[in-house]
Figure (cartoon, rainbow, N blue to C red):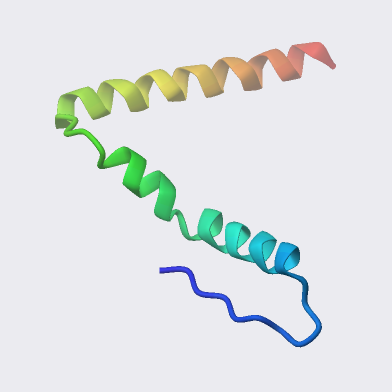
Length: 66
């Protein structure tokens, strides 16, 4: 769980900004979203393979663009 405490002379906006940054860095939201529905192992492998192919294509496109 992400926890932040209010520093002296710190505004609520900056406190909220620090909290959001800590939550995103901890990966809590991505874990919750991933576990929202049950996904079988084979489906998860298929999704990961699709993501890897997309990443590879993006990297390849970047090298040809320069």
